[in-house]
Image (cartoon, rainbow, N blue to C red; front, side, top):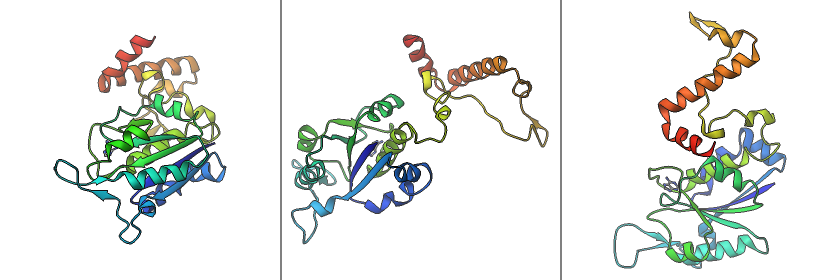
Length: 231
Ligand code: ADE
């Protein structure tokens, strides 16, 4: 079981994603526990529930202040050991390997940033890992937090219906998944490749492998480079 505690200014943003489909099933089965915390509940100023302020030295935008984040993390951690993750475009790129590693941890606290970011003292004192979900800037850390929870949760044993769903998928062995087809074999004249209808398992496997390599070469040659280095 992995427990996620998400600290956010927009707790409602998570409602839909976490209450549907596989993530809902995973929570019902207690494989995943998700707690959403409203950062404003931890503001020392409960009248205005203020959590942000202007950056020292000037500059545009607002920063999340240290006090609400320090207090939130202390309270959420309690006596449990937890890893604190901050999602930010200035972190290293989140990958399938990171997702796999995180499934081994029991308690993950995710800070969703907003505005221009968070006070550096939170990063120095409390944050254990930082991740970016890609080279673009989003309006906040909520979507990256959802991405992280989703990518980690589906790798927890028993979360996906069949364990086979985890093999042969994109990024396993740094290969993208090749083309797949379902019925009908002839859809308005568009035919499924003969080899897939042949029943020759070995030939099908070879065809799939060749297609995966071809697609990776075309779309993500950088992955093939990594593959050559590791094999
Ligand atoms: N917050 C805003 N943009 C982000 C990104 N690309 N990755 C992670 N957190 C973010």
